[in-house]
Image (cartoon, rainbow over the protein chains, first blue to last red):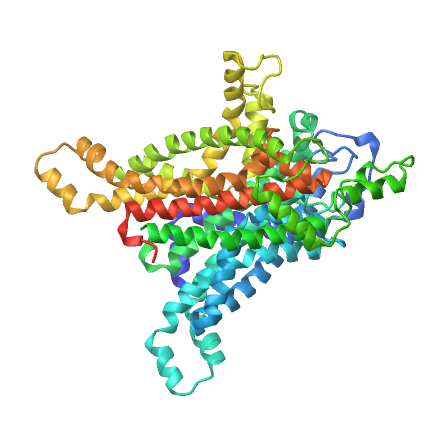
Length: 281
Length: 320
């Protein structure tokens, strides 16, 4: 903990990023309490493409719905989805990676073949095809489909770390004492690679925000009725909106940009803290 | 060396086979078929059924798959239902567009990344170096579509320096100089956007490589012999670190393919990525399956190419 803190103190940009990250994420969740989705999405044709004003801080969209409210609710949805994907892929990746690294042998071989195969796939295209064939398409299926393709990189990383960790003396000693394999894996090996896991989870979280918003932008994510950062940015597909009604899509695009940058920066600082060789202080 | 290449090549075959099976089954499960979209109240259901029968859509899936695979080996992926032309012709046209765009992107990418990486390494920890690290960091973190949209907004709409879409000005007659100039002009903005996003790996690699090389014996020997610093960098260090950079070509291919879907959609550039998105919405199976296979094949080829170049350049990482 002290190491992490020192790393942030030493790096001003990382510190600023941490503050921005905390403020935006908590700000979105707190602000979303004050917005009623039904109220925000209410259509008022008189307010069509209203420019930013005191009433609509960031103007309104084609249906006269408030952009600022949509931005807050959309950001909340995007963040929740990204968190869900990160948790699912993280858990699956850690379990599989630990098992492969610790047990080795055929388990390792089998999963590595699967992972190799997944990595060579043009996954974005396959996710899109997948999304179009799912009969009952909901937020949950969306999360599951992305997760299906997201666990491999974490599994690979965890595998390589736990592979070297599992050959250490303390693991051998524990084995000789007759400790249960599961106890060794989760109580002894996992804590030793947990710093890497936290770093990876942070960077993955940023990546997942990008995947969700990107797919939604292309029209293969959340339906337009559910606000998300992606649906707001997708308004830019209309050249008129893009050039004239910039307040509809630009804030969401900049929001994604700032969020991604700050989370990534925090992740990098954490990585330096986790890896003694890269530390600044 | 050749043994490993052949083996890698042989591994590609089952991978492609599994991919083809996967994509074929997925495409078959897409809701509706190419004829559903053409049903109007006046359409005779019997006619639709007849069309399905003629196109073999009523056969069991494995028969359809076998037939499809057989044709695929001959480079024949059937006809596009929406464009009414052979899939191979359609994709061929789009693939050329994507190819030129990728080529320009690759040129820009190396033109940006190589000097930045080398100079950042040479002047390590200087203001310039920190700027480069920050730049490569931002380009790593920013999602493709966000940067592309912002670029299009500023350079396409606000400043109007570049066209906002398309691949060529329709007023230009094909084959003239103006036609090709217009093609390049249309590619500059999407290629630049993609290049900016792809530089991070090369910059980081070159930077560390140059920083490491500084303390190498051969550099110290050259310096001790009185070779001026400029020459040490341009002759010795640069040449030594340049070859591995060539290996990034493979990764670059794979990376460009993934990003091309966003770039081509946003800049309305008629390449393979844009064709993919439009085929998805029109349920044009034959095009979708062929495109995914092609992308999968190119991605595999890209990683194979990287491994081969790597093993030639750096014997330490030769594939076992």
